[in-house]
Amino acid sequence: MKYFINAPTAPTEDTPTHFVIVSEDGREYNADKKTIDADAIAAFMDTKQHGKAEVWAYNAKDWWPDFHSTFSLPKDYKDLKEWHEALGAPTLPAPPVNASPREQAVWNRDVWAFLARYDKQVTGTPAEEAEEEPPEEGTQRKKASRKK
Image (tube, rainbow, N blue to C red; front, side, top):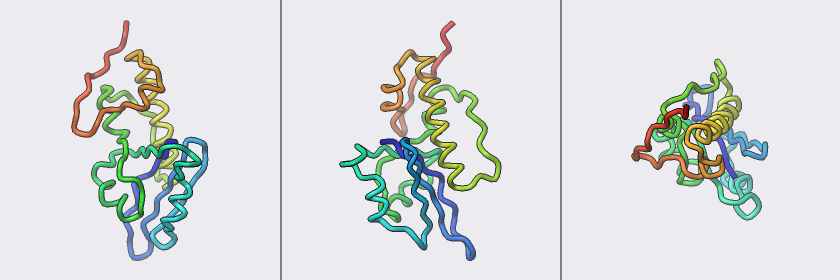
């Protein structure tokens, strides 16, 4: 099961850290530092019920390592920005302006769907394979070139 998470908002005096996880089957988990419940997240991402958890986020390398341990999330993640760049940086769907955490998470899901289709078109790789094998962090993948 794929889970799409927004980059968490930085806490301020008035606003706690807030993040949203949107699953590929449409379920949502909303949390902030005041209401976070590791057991509820574990139930939401239950691998027995929903299969292996595959977490996707945009530009996560800067915040995911600390974030996952703070909120008891899976350690591994897949970075949409890295996959996007490995595909030659095609034009992505426009992100929502002044987006809420939920809108950001939904945008990440939409970016994943766009990149899976794009990868299939330019490389001929079926979307199922494309989605399972984005580039590993720190590795280069051949830039895709459009077939003529």
